[in-house]
Image (cartoon, rainbow, N blue to C red; front, side):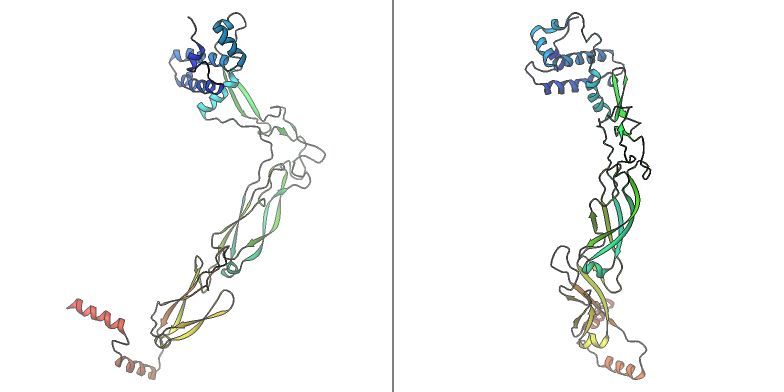
Length: 370
């Protein structure tokens, strides 16, 4: 049976480029692979035909000979296609195998693995969040071994090339026309092994130590703020780069203030007289001082008074939030006989003008009942 034209087999034109040939081959090889068409004997023949055509057209010299003499250029002895597979088909097919089964090819690991990132939870007060601070923290972590300088090998020695994989970090196994590649179990993909490990770190290149670090906490940080200290995490394996340290901040509950963003809130009880006649009281501030709050005449419970720019500083800004003071009118307790008489006298003289909210509410109640 005469062979089909190689360009026709791959579905490309004679003037196409190498990339187009490779793309057509990969697509057809995946489509006609016997494992994807089990039970169809014609697929094996078509698959071999595709591989044979690609092996000729991908090679510049073979392609030139084919363009000039056709199939006759490869007739006779020494034909590498006697069985439908070229000598370097296994290497070529490894890319197709990756696409079929999702096994990405990986290069050799250098053995210098990056250290892990660390997390540290730090609790601060609202006053510290207001003004900012420099905090000292102590944490146990893996640091570079000083004895071997992170190599993992004993002083005076060095890691040697892995004999199992010849330093590639990968081992190949041929199974028929498949070539399976996997991580070298001897060196774990590093390409090198340590024959004489460091006595201090056991070959890891790092040891556990307690470290003291300074953390700069800027003014205005909020609960849950994360601060990253680059390179302050765990030291890498065998001299690899260190990971990062992440400081997660949380704020302790305050006795007086509650915080919402950059604003502060507090509740202040005032006397019934102050609420009725008006007056003034003082509240503390996070700067450490006090500020006066004026109470208008006739203030009711729940009234919120705003003190501009008395709240928290805005992170990385010169502006500040506000402070909101919510007043709570306190009902007097344990009255004397004379105080009770005065209150009853006051109640008899009350009118709709002195208690408009109470008068209005009960007026609506009467309308509802009627």
